[in-house]
Length: 68
Image 1 (cartoon, one colour):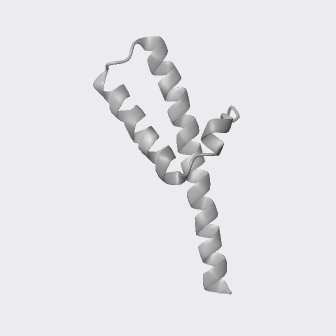
Image 2: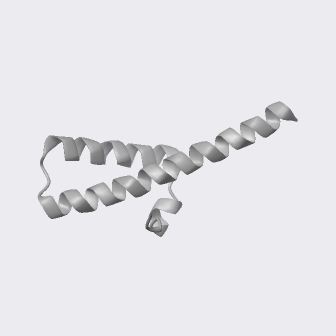
């Protein structure tokens, strides 16, 4: 997978998720032309990966607290 853009790396989970939801809504509506849809999809994939990594990190922290 391609490296996440630096602006995505700096987003909070909530902001990344909100942007991802907006992208999904736009793609589902069919408003964007093909090239724009591809770019939106690529950004959405990067945002999804960022959200998943953030959740995994939070889960690992919680597990350490519970075990400790």
